[in-house]
Structure formats: structure tokens, C-alpha cells
Length: 151
Image (cartoon, rainbow, N blue to C red; front, side):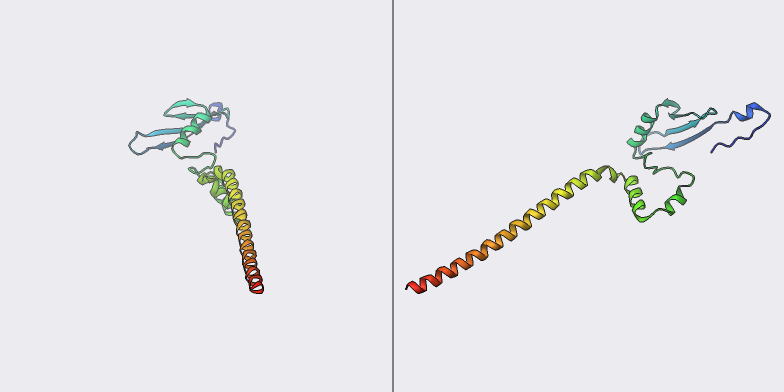
């Protein structure tokens, strides 16, 4: 939040804000991720004080497993209360988003359908085999009965 008050001194109204995350990956030097909100209200992103587009910034964060879309590394104002009010289904969706498993939902659904088809085919084949075995047994019994009457 940037709070400003209408003051007589115009320079006092030229407020800006910067949030910096200092991240030190294992066996690497510290990296500074920053978001800057300027007095005009525009935002820009920086890594190690070099200005980047939001896409470049997010890709770099993602390369370290920090998913901005999932909001898994910062707790924003109001998030705790919002999470506490979620339904179980909404909580599941949130956990899938944070863990990144939502990216595999379509593939999971496709594989689940393929598995169901395979199970259905296996059940059909088993039922058909069982029916054929019963018919074979009946035919063998009929053959034996016929041979008894012919003898």
C-alpha cells in the first residue's frame, strides 16, 4: 500500500514504493528481485537493478520455482482471510495452483479416460471369455451325453 495525504507541499505527494526480495540460490550469488511502483502509479520490475518486462521477470522467478501466478512466495494483504473463507473445492483448486499440478489437469483427465476405456474393454473381454467357457462346457456335456446315447 502507498498512502498519501493531501499536503500543501507537492513534493510530499510524489511517493513511490519498492519491494525487494533477496534470493540466494544454493551455490550462487544473491539475486535481488524488485517491483517498483512509481508516483504516477505505473509499475516496473527489476532484477539486480536492471529493468525488465513483467514477462522476463516472471520467467526468471519461475526458473527458481517461484510461481507468481500461484502467489506462492508472498502473502498479499487480505489473502489469509480469503483462504480461510474458501470452500473445500476452492482450497483444492488453490493447492493445485500453488503446487503447479493444475498444469497437468488436462493430461490427467485424458489419461483417466483412457484408463477407464481400457478397464471397460478388459471387463467386456473377461465377460465374453466367461460366456465362451460356459458354452464350451455345455457343448462338452452335450457331446458326452450324445456319445452315451450312441454307444
